[in-house]
Image 1: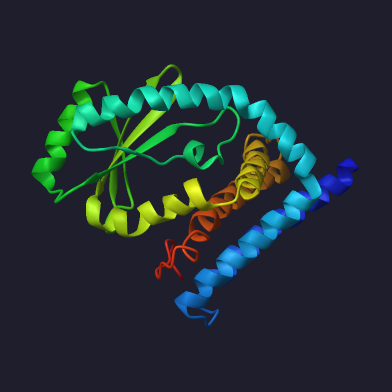
Image 2 (image 1 turned 30 degrees about the horizontal axis):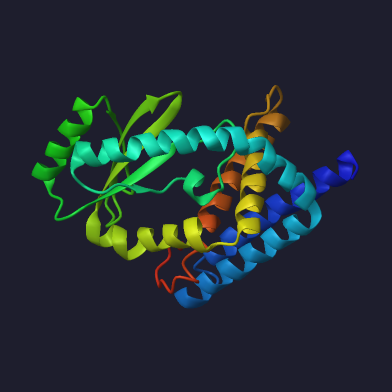
Length: 251
């Protein structure tokens, strides 16, 4: 395929991502939540099938190239899981792009979700202290003000960033645990590999040097496409798991 045709294909894929995200998250689109969730799943799968049909040989080569990195990540994950359980006395749940098989070359961390029963401020402070004693630094509060809020602590092990995410157990198990069950264990392998391939493309575009206003605009567009592609990736898991709430706001 010529360079121009490759560019046109990826430009079209980026446009599809933006259009799909806007359509299913717009109040102007008079759809029920159920129809939005089903539409996201169906359109996302259609996109993956299109890319797989065009790029499957390149995708397979990419996944083969990723294998040494996957082996390293697996070793680090196997080492860290028992340490985190010992640290917090709660069973950690590996839940990163690596566990889903959608990780990209040179840009993968390892996430461990911690469903904390009856979490309150006192328990959070105790667990945060334990994380600090094991060398983790407080990194972020994500989804603040929502039931799915999580408190992130991180450190590097063997050059890999480890993120420990303290979650309220009930909302986590009701939604995100089911989402990860699909992404990590039920989604077909070809779709996982295609997702990694698409993510790699968008990520590469976000890292391009931008010396002109046009180039800067292209990088910002790629960042938006990458962000919205990942949002659709997570939300497309809602439909097969029978979940009835959107993960990103309709506005």
